[in-house]
Amino acid sequence: MKYFRFVCDIKTKPSEAVDTTRDSAINEVGVFCAYLSRMYEYYFPATQTDNVVSITVCLTEDAQEAEPPQSCANIKVVTNVMDIGKFTRLTPSGKSLYIIGLCQQAIMSLVSEMSWETESFEHTYNRILGKDCLFREYWRKAKCSPNRQLKAQIYFEDDYEKDGIYVDFTDKSGKLIKRVQFAPSGYHIYSKSISELQWENNSHVIIKRAFSHSCTKTCDYWIIGIDGSIDYHSPRAENSEVNPHGLFDLGILYWEGKIIMPNQDKGLELIRKAAELNYKHAQKWIERNISITANKQQTD
Image (cartoon, rainbow, N blue to C red; front, side):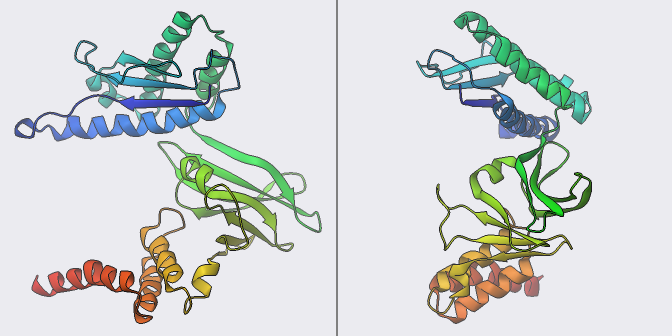
């Protein structure tokens, strides 16, 4: 078993009968499902499940009306019924417990049907409960600085309260000295984007950003200091006159703030530099996103 996916299969009402409170709750169920399924997958230990590699749990309001995707040999789909009204009355912590409880019920019904060992599934569920449904973990082992006086480790938060990726700097005994956030989104982004951590010197670490499945000499990287400093480097952008595309891409990263910490002023500065180098995509982006906004503000 490798993959778990919890999804909200509750339908919004037709446009003529819009219920904003209900629609907001449905969207919120989706958010809780997404992070809890990542959490379940992260904690689930390797176990034999007859070549089944994925379980999808669909939460719906009415089992009679549900039309979930069909199961196949390697992918199993199960459903459970939830009360959206009950969900809206719960605290955030209660919402997490409610969702994971419903998903676990559906999973265990499949486990019983397939005659699988229950230990791994029970272990994962209890692990999530023991964490109070808060997905906060360290990634891999801490690494010592060259002088062996400090340690650094990547830490992520990816739940209903917080979302981000950090570097924790600690002393030799493990006491936290400084926590520095260097990326805005948690494990689901981190697991696809971050390659490794290494020390540059006794006060700064380098964290490489992986492209595809390998990390090359041209990959982007962060330099993060125990003083809280964060510098994001893109070799493609640094050779901007030869490659204005790299400059534009870096500007978009800062502007959107999905992979690196957002800084729209810096992002716009980089995009404008790419436009000045006659990079057409940058020129069109400015025309579409900046010029139109400026004209609208003048009209207003």
